[in-house]
Length: 358
Image 1 (tube, helix red, strand yellow):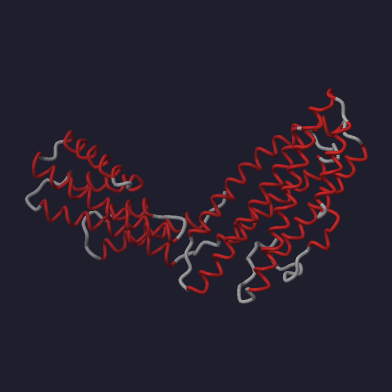
Image 2 (cartoon, rainbow, N blue to C red):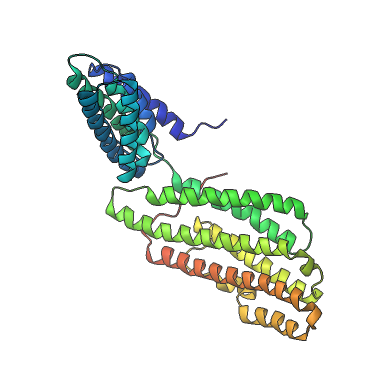
């Protein structure tokens, strides 16, 4: 079982919330601990938004709870009615993520039955706010997330698997059922990459200079992910039309294999450039010139289709689907190459993207 930073931060936030509540001599410090659980977030930016939203929800819940107790009393049915109205208001104000904390506030306040109801209500509302703020402090100070490292690692691992499959499948040497099973896992990993990219993009840097550098990296990572998607498209087409590949003209099949090998090597080279393991200030097109002549590659297949009779036309169209994916993949690699060159050549003050060492 892997224990992530968020697990540790949750524990630290609970301890801090309980300690502060006891230090301030607040009654029911457990409320601060409960609030801290709801408020913990994966990054500082989301934590900031959560604090704002949950403080607002806490105030709304407290106001409704106090009004209902003063007007209708605190019968259990009244508590349920107050909860329903609170949920409706929070949905209207688009604060649905903070509904749990507001409901905790309502129950905590409406269960009080004494002459100092208003005073206890304010104290309990403050108690819950202490828990929310404790989580924000923990997110701000402890265990800053390394989203860039995680993001690159996920991209690198996915590309490693996809590019291996492309080499094997283009030679009709893959087991179809195993490939389909692995492709399903690849799509799940791509969703993780998208989520990690969103967290990395949301994560804020305090210095304006660093913010500009990060924005340029964000463009690079977005292009890397797009290129990864194109490679996955090729793999899907190769698997989908494997029968047509098997009956393809041997000379054309060999041409396609060589072209794909060249593009895959190009992609691997760009991944190395991305982390500074290959030359960074010059484009790599000359190194992979055989796969840069896309017009010639396309004409070889279109000319072959014109020679086919009607019976083979459907099969030829399927082959064109593969060819179009390959051409688009090559264009994305070339775009990534130029973007990377610009990044390293004209922004020498920027740090190379981080990556996880093996």
